[in-house]
Image (cartoon, protein in one colour):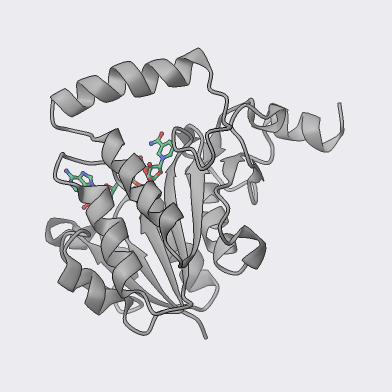
Length: 229
Ligand SMILES: NC(=O)c1ccc[n+]([C@@H]2O[C@H](COP(=O)([O-])OP(=O)(O)OC[C@H]3O[C@@H](n4cnc5c(N)ncnc54)[C@H](OP(=O)(O)O)[C@@H]3O)[C@@H](O)[C@H]2O)c1
């Protein structure tokens, strides 16, 4: 049986990942801020919860010990290097050879070949800057977190989420190497299916050292691509 650690387990994406992991019969260790532990009450007795900030290196060290896979929600929250601190701790302490799967948004680029719409550019450059000034969100730190992941010699995958929505699962999202590819045009994914893709990546070695940008499998652009229309 696989043992996985979910870092950022109490968030919306994290809770979906916990459920998917339990459905697969995995042993689950979750890390979340102490104040958020109660958000995981529905899983009481079925998972181990290690409370603490996800950029607390000692907390992460304890949580990832003996895990075959680590699923990490890279949250660009606050301006205290939360995302990069989290990523660095996982890179440093996950066991050698463990599968590491990180979540982020389309704004992250692996090779600079992504082509962004004006809407995404405005969101990142204007809204992102304003959010940083307000000390709420630091997208640059999520960029730094991913830079460190890409540069590491670990077995990583960075899953780049489109805009997200809630709703019942439609199945595994489709993906492409670059934002701007026609299949991704619809730019929407169910959060529950984003989590499904994170889990599937754990067991898909073809995604090692890849940063798939995902979109819902039932979206217009995904269906158009599938039928070759
Ligand atoms: N939202 C979108 O539209 C969108 C689009 C594309 C990609 N993504 C990516 O999807 C992933 C999940 O994002 P989400 O928006 O769906 O949110 P989410 O799953 O609810 O996750 C947010 C995480 O941030 C933590 N958090 C919230 N406020 C914090 C603070 N002040 N300090 C430290 N941690 C804090 C939460 O922990 P607590 O439970 O302790 O609050 C939770 O672990 C992220 O990697 C994100 O980049 C999101």
